[in-house]
Length: 519
Image 1 (tube, helix red, strand yellow):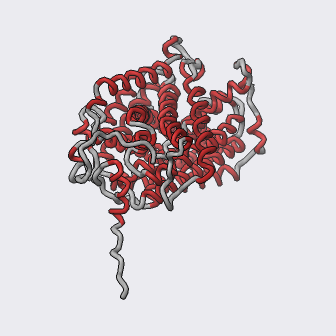
Image 2 (cartoon, one colour):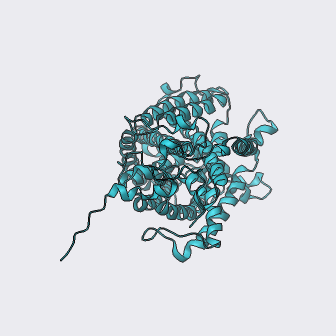
């Protein structure tokens, strides 16, 4: 006599990982494999990052700055591999926060989550500023403040355009993950097609060979370390692009089969971004009509596209860049909401009960979408008359992202060394390569954090007014956010920590959200 097995409910299996954290399922699972991939690659956003800071990379390191692209990829790929293994084991909202809490301790988890949350809010502002680098090049009608030649014309206009984008991402995210997923998927599809088309068009218009990436344009002459000093500064442009791949895991509670799909999405997103972005940068340098002059270091890739493709095709491509910027800002905002929700669910933020409330209609946290949007707008307003708004806001955001990632890779390495890390059975695993990859991820993260936060005038105070606190702005900002935030947590919030009753799994005890360290 044979018996038939009762079919496994896929939603129940997807929710199994939540029980380890004591959470009950609340968010609606609607995202498939491509949606998950789209979330990761839209955060990285090839056309957003390369077009936003090419001018800085080229101006700081000349054509040879291109080598920072494979260098940053190699380092971030080590981090992505670690994250993919974690995503297979713990595909939950607020990935960085919950991972650090689970494999480290609740205090480290809070700090990693806090740094990532603030960094995400800063990143929303930084990405939104990219509108200014593209829209006025499409038409001067988008330069609402002055004619762009005044000291504060560009910075002020950038804030206005960015504010419009942030309002859009706030509204879309408030209406639920389904609308966000549709817009993101369509945007990513357009971005990928546009990137391939751009690569082909640049390739058929090349005027010089690939040896162009060996030219430094004399940029090392002003550094005590020679070109190495210039190269380290220029690497900021590449570091800005290749992060955010953890978004695929942060949407784990809204994805189908997340323990399989999230790791694949993380790896595919960073590899695709590296390959396509690297070709765009290389072919742009090979096809632009001239490498001299200051337009490459002021107008960047936007100038190259118009120079090589002409005004009609060039502006059509810039509209595609604008779409990429839009979905990138949307993805960053989405990830920040999931992180805020995850921390609030553990009663780890002020007004947690309100921030963790899931709309019964839209099945998404609405209040975090609004609060995060308002805070991103506040960052823009503070910097409205800052001529270096692009590099300052962007640099600070990247530094904090790298620190938050270290809050995951370091405790993961400790867990490996102590034999307490167990990958998900039958899911993505690094196997024997886990330890060397994890070590490389930590070393890379630490070295790049130092490089990014170093108080260089060329990054944080390259033009007037010259003040010491502007040059040390990143150090001061990070110190205040990390130190002040953790002090608040230690003396106030940690005494309240615990999964809120309305989010707790019914069978789970009413214990503090102090998950044990790695298995």
